[in-house]
Length: 154
Image (cartoon, rainbow, N blue to C red):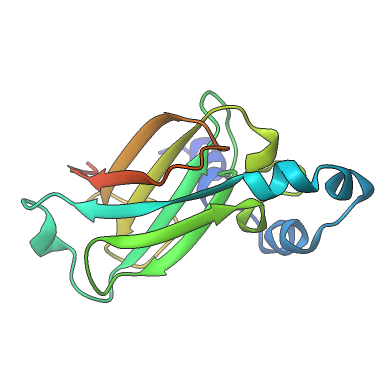
């Protein structure tokens, strides 16, 4: 991976600590006006793992659940880091999990959800990590979603 690709890849998945903190504490007049929309923008669901991959996901493994905006570069819209102690595992993603202020679930129309077990505990994806994706999700859905981890990254 060349230096430019590595840099943009790192930015896409790592985010910046300052921006993540600012996103979690950012409040504006617009957020007050859109309080109803924001409350409705909460994705709940479960992550499970395919039987053929289950032995690779040891108890205590790090799971990242990310909301991505399809066709857009940069960090995920929202990320939740969880420790896996059993399957399936429940999750909630909302605007408090945003990586960058102003780039939130409530501002999106369709997203892709990704659940990734990091075998090394790192946010940056690596070969060997286990992943599952759910395409074309409405972030305002009130129905729980289900993501199946069914692939190994190469």
